[in-house]
Length: 195
Length: 209
Image (cartoon, rainbow over all chains, first blue to last red; front, side, top):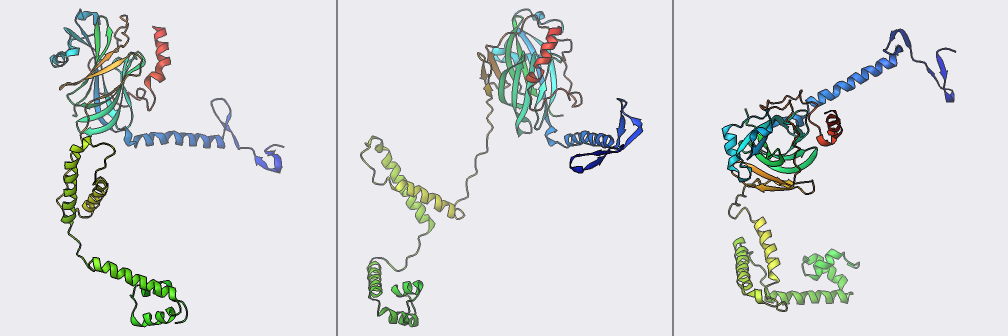
């Protein structure tokens, strides 16, 4: 009886060849059909990598820098020991904006991310924390020094702001954010200059 | 010819545009067709009537003639439309019907004679609107754009304050370094919201803390 199975309609199919010298991890013999399946799986797994490498949508068209500042008219030490003072140009820029003019500023976190041609990306100034996130995606390439981005600001896992902005080198987007410890968070997103 | 000529031949015969041989053969057939003879007589009468009022040939005016006439009519129409604001609905301007026809004729002539006229004016270069488009999905939150030379300033109002007990994580980067794609293979999400994908992960992380 061994070796042949009778199927309905009198069709018979031979049992797969079994090589008792080869066993898989479960202790079951590896058949030729299984070997072909493994080969096909490996081939399929390799294909996406090649496709991804050839995807022009992953081309980088720029880089953005995201900073989170803390502005307060009270005690700047309330931001904690990890906060650092701002540099002079940034302080001057913030003070020049009427609604962002505070007595003291501190920098809390930053991130630097590439802007892909046709994929979204996220900036996370506090890795491991999703308290403040920024999602961005290119809408159009307005010029070599400017991009129109679809910019989203997420605070406490909620989408707070969605905006279509033109981001250019030297002209950041400054968002007066929520209150925190007697001051306000200021989120800055700017296009990094091309090296 | 005893059989009825074809339609084309008959039409030419009615208009007296056949040569002698063909006309004679059709005449032979038409002797027994008084209605066709009458038709030809009517055509001859109409032709004589029109010919007495219109020249046989007339030179087509040059393009500038049409343009000048159209411009003149438009000017006349504009002069009349100034005091016409007080014209009641019941009163119709005598040249009102001319406006659409004039505009259409001007467009058609301008298109056809464009190569004879002055060069087309250069179109103004497309400009990119720098004003951001803002949208706040959260109820009670408003965003205001403030124009500035040095920055694009957006003011959020109505956003919930961040709890004072929230601390800056130890992993906060104060000096950002350009990220590499390999390092961020887990970070960026294609077409899926970070918040949506990681809401559960955040809840778990908060529970641990």
